[in-house]
Length: 255
Image 1 (tube, one colour):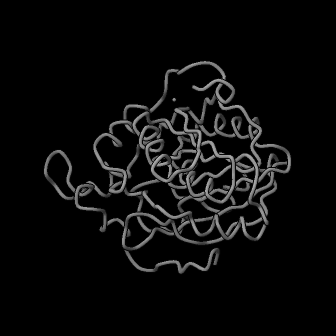
Image 2: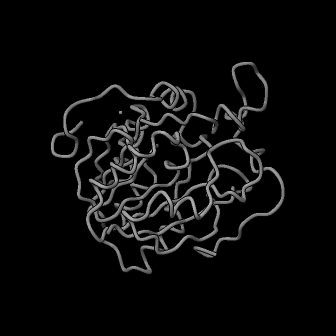
Image 3: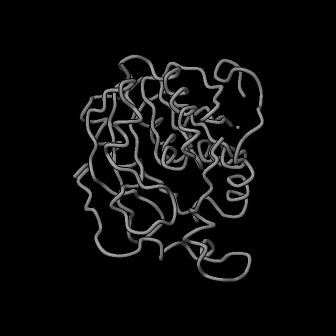
């Protein structure tokens, strides 16, 4: 079990969202299963030297931007303040503590900030302008330097190379037809020998609400031969629920 986590067993993992996340516009209490972490799949967004060009027309911007405007960061289902323990253990095992790192879909910036505290030179990207603003404010309050950029990860203007790329919840939220753009982005920005750490929902997670579930063989199919998939471990997706969803944690090396 990656990171020493215990994979929860049993039924639904969607019942424990924060109070505000459970209330939708109609006043019902089922927003935790769909509007909050539901099918907002069309993920897409500039600072000179990191982005090529200016702000672009973004796919899915409205959905994600409205989500961040509607909820405080701490109340979003995917909010997790500490560094993901699977990521931390992977970095420790590799002795990786320095270099340029990218946090894809950084959201409120928690993971990017924790990477910066370890000593990485960090960039965090997200489609949502509100998320980016909150991430910048959070980094300032923590006294760390992180470059936060609004960007479309399936049609990205990011300029690498990065030694470490972290995807904690992006790939499993991308439309099937957009995965080629996502992979093209990675092909440009991950340096040869660079590390990709990816966490996604597992096919063993019950139900069909929220992000897409993925099997280990699907990760091999999508990422090889661009990457060497070194390991895929069963774990959990740490988030704002009492019971954490089943997840896969993959460690890959850019070839």
